[in-house]
Image (cartoon, rainbow, N blue to C red):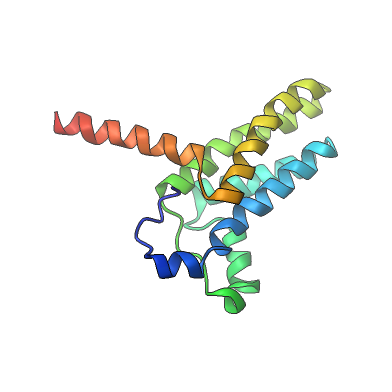
Length: 149
């Protein structure tokens, strides 16, 4: 779902935790930032999403996994494919908006923004099914279909 289609079943089994590690840390950080109403934590999480979506080939937490757990649990996570990077790109302003809402004292707005994001993050963490990756696929399918027409 996140664009790791080139992985065979053996590689997917080997990387079952590695592919969920970054989403798990993102979910944890966003949940913590929301519960604490902490713009600082949320801006830090938006920074990791920005880095993973726009600046590097891997999410920063993928590098952490590769250094700390990868040697013990099956090796590093491959480079982030387009759908996963797109998810980070969508998450960046979304997380920043939650932080800004808390800064503005609009806690209800912050929670209204955070709840669906936490559901999306929990879903990808537990199932590897990712709504932003699905949207990416639909958008790029239309581009391919339009070019063929």
